[in-house]
Length: 95
Image (cartoon, rainbow, N blue to C red):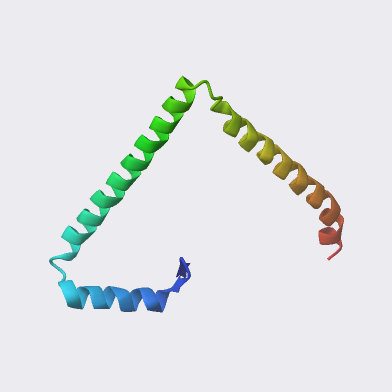
């Protein structure tokens, strides 16, 4: 099992070190603090995105351009994938 290029053994060592440093009774409080911090970061990011979008709309900038480009790129990617599947399909069947 790998999580962000860290193997299971390395995760185990980190968990043991954290338990030794903080003790089992402090771990839930630390996890709660990390969770709150991550939530605040996510909320701040969403606020910044909202402000940028509102400012762009006030200035008359088309905010749907990025969405359109994203949809176009997705359709191009799907088209390329279908073409590759068409080429490799017979090869896979012969193996």
